Length: 272
Image 1 (cartoon, rainbow, N blue to C red):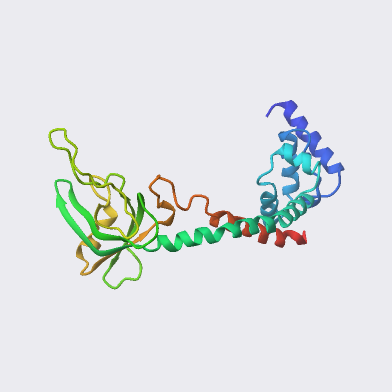
Image 2: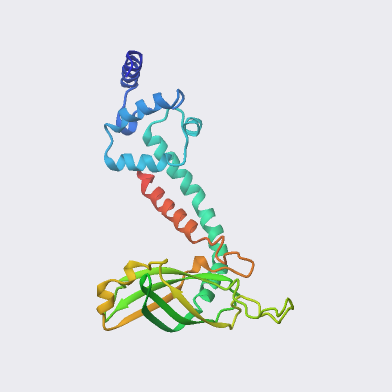
């Protein structure tokens, strides 16, 4: 550190000591740039508990130094925590109500997506030039009201009587080019359009992994198991309509959880 920088830090420390208070009650220098602010924060942090420091970090997590100075000029960490906690308590109920209002629409979509099912599931480990190739074959049935162009299935492999899977993978299932028919000598034959419509069904086959397969699905434990059972479940966030749009785009679930957690935290911090 340069001599000038050292003298600056010492001067700032003496200035802060003269301001009175410590820890949560030490005024922070918010209007003189990041270096001065960081020096004042470091001095305050020395007398904070770990919980105090975490609560302060939560309070300023979405505030720049300029915003902090605008809202809480030279305020103490305690005042900032109180102010941000109150702000969340004031705003969160309205936001929660807005998110809850659109939730039923997506709840209905989730219920429909659950009606995309796989039956007659078979698991095999076939050998080719590249070694063992784990393969899943199944029949998909769209018992929902949703036309589907693409989705992913969460594949879970269970061995013998085990309750937990030994391997999992997300399998992409696309119907965008799933048509039959061809032209003859340049002529146009009848071509069936792709897509998985409501009430539709199709046979599917999935190779797990790339050229050399997914090693997690070909372990010796799997090879020697007497019973190998695969469960396939749709990944709700992956399901697309015929326009290639995600059905759950704009779903409020993550935001709702985030706001509720923030409100719970703010309520807890109301005692500061």
